[in-house]
Structure formats: C-alpha cells, structure tokens
Length: 335
Image: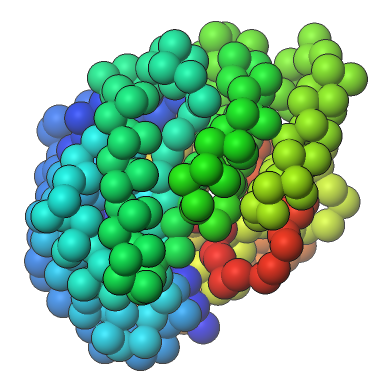
C-alpha cells in the first residue's frame, strides 16, 4: 500500500529557475494553477495510513495560503509533513505559522553560497533575502524549541559545485540540520546537459575535479558536525529509486495520479503523450485506494520491479544512489 504522497497544491511561482521543468514544454497557463479543495478532501480517509506527505510540485508552495492548513491537518493525523520553499516569502508572521502548523521538515532551496552564483540559477531571487529569512526562522525555532527540522537543498551543477563546501559552512553557521544535494534531473536543453556532473550525460565532466570538490565538502561537514547528503554520479546495478512506486505516488494539482513526481513533471513538454499514458487515475473521479490497486497500476509496478519500464530506464534518478555523512541520524525522507 502507498505510504508516501507528493501533493502539488499550486503551479504558481515567483521565480524562473534555470533547471525548472516548468519552462520549455506544456503551456501550464492553460491548466488550473491552484489545487481544488476537493482534491485534498478526497485524501482525508487515507491520511491515517500515510507515513509522509510532501507538499511540493511545479510551483512555490508558499504562494498557496491554504498550505499550512493542509500541513496542520495532515500532521494531526500522524503524517510526517514536509515542503520545500525558495524562501522569498518567509516573514515573521509566516515563520510563526509554520511552527504552529506542526510541520516536521522544511527544505529551503539555496543553489549557491554567493549572490552571483545563486541568482544566476534562480532568476528573480535574492541571495541575501533568502539567507536573512532563513537566519530569522532558525532563531525563532531556537527560541521556541520546536520543529520543523530544516535542510538546505542544492541542485548540483558545474557552476555551483565549487561552492558546495562554502554552502555547508553557511548551513552550519545558520544551524540547519542538513544539506541535501541532488543531481540535475530535467536535462531538456544542451545548456543543462553541459551543466550535468554525470559523465553518462556529459562525457567531458572533469571527474577528478568533481570528486575533489565533493571530498572537500564532506570534510567540512565532518568538521562542522553537519549532515550532508550527496547523490551518486554513476548508476548502481540495483533496481532502486528514491520515489519507489511500491510505496510512493504523486498527485498533480488537478487530481491526476502518477507513479512518481518525476513522471508527473516530465509531462511539462517531454514525451507528453507517452507520459500521460502513465496517468493512473484521478482522485476526483475515483478513490485513491481504488486507483492504487487497479490492474493498470499493478502492471506498472511489476514492470518497474522487473526493470522493464521504458521511461524509468531513461530517468536521471533511476538507480541513482545517495551517500550521506551524518553525525547523528535524523528522520528525513527524500523529496
């Protein structure tokens, strides 16, 4: 049975990030941008069965003012709740509301340790504003002695890898629990392929230099007693996936159910017709538990387990392991 749900409540965003799948594909302006309340209402019977819910998708979650209401309801049902924000809309009032909501894990995207690098990746963002907002939030959390745990997220690419160690230092200064690094997922342009640190996609990657930067960042994490999670740059032989379809699913803002968030957001332009074939149902038309046990969904899971699912084989996340330095274990789901 499913244990982890990724729920897209909005596709509204205030930024134009260079690696975002929102751009270059499907015209999402023709689609509903706010999830109808009926989508969340349909999930209420399933909340007690869940281990986690990540309120993320192809939008900035904090643009949806209902977000923390969803968090509160899910948390009270015993669900481990989380979302990632670009940090631009955090303010004193919203900080208080996050803490009061019972949110368990907050991710803040920070794809660089300097204004120039960060702002070249996240068009429309301010490095200083995000850092100041995060520092204020961490101070408030320390004063209240409460959750959420906080992690900084970075999408690794050639232009920011050399700042990873500095970002670990910054995270330690801010007293966050974790730096979580991911590879580029949506390599839909030549420019993005050229930014990839995986030699599978860009054979010109300077592997020795890449590995030196990674080793330096790990050393800093050990020195600063900070958890650092890093992606593997080579595929493993195991049929592994951080969004394993045996336990995980993604629900788009219109109620469509997909096996994973990568499938769902690839729908923004890449092999659109093929990926829409992987739409397993819609929670506004059928209960989620019925969709999950449908023959079609079971066939997909069987194909995945057998390593025969074509789109999984072409996915940049499939068979991508992670390594972590952790001074102490913390509960954290990959999202």
